[in-house]
Image (cartoon, rainbow, N blue to C red; front, side):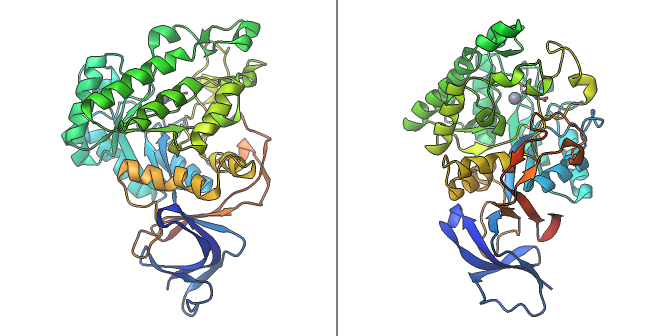
Length: 425
Ligand code: DOR
Ligand code: ZN
């Protein structure tokens, strides 16, 4: 028996398709995609998708699952549930676990846990350097053979430019994407929020936008030098968008992501010393938010990723200076991103490209397209189902979310991975 998604608006930018279709799933794959009413329902389970949007499954290429080592914040299973509930069919998980995912044993452990959780697909991102300490490169061949999908020292920058050059050269030989957490730690100093009017008002030490832009410029130059594929993580600053735009125009092999909080919030959210507005890079100004929206609209920013960064109250319920960086994002990302469509920043196909087509292409993983024969990884959206964010209802183990109580325009109502329903509202 197959699963027939009937009458939905199929939005698949990889096929330049935006039309009402029936979609039949059999044996974990897209068996047929055809005009509404043309696939006989007999013998199949039918899901009425009229009025809904059927998309290739969303892929979040930047999450922190915290396992191994910090299972009190999140596990691969709980993070997988949060992903499914948020409309994601796959996530790429960053290596800053304990121990760091810098060797094949950790990569395999993550994949085994993910397989037994049977939720979403999990693609481990392995470390660029041993222990992510920025000193000695990890063994990329071994990591790729174990299942690593990309490389990053996320959470920390690779401060040594020569090591970053060698990392890009080495990664290039294995065609592994290098994801850069671009930050100049000297410019960050002891800063805890964006350096500007609000940091002065609050008496908190600031992080200038230049802490990001100078590091982004360096890495873009190194991508051009080496020809290796470089991906800039969590773009927060207008200057970064402009640098990436220029390098891309010159043909450099660069891609980039931003996160929903960077196009939704400004440093004003820190007023009241709310540690749920503390993350790295920090929330910035109205002008930065506008530039990020422009970068999304004109294609400078290829992907929307969550940087889902779970922390417990032990790390967050502290003085602002002392609190951990990061917010969870898997269960609010789609709702926040739909605001971009509602306000005309992005078309629906553009949004689906940033949540599915582009991350699939950059990671080189299955998915991102709903053609016949492709894996049945599918996200079904209801664009007109307003809901109120309630952190108590989250599947994530953590609650560090600045959007509690927000009203969002729509959400994922069905998430299908390999033909299996992993979430249904
Ligand atoms: O805010 C952040 N949290 N930024 C990072 O780069 C790391 C992340 C985390 O692991 O908590
Ligand atoms: Zn990072």
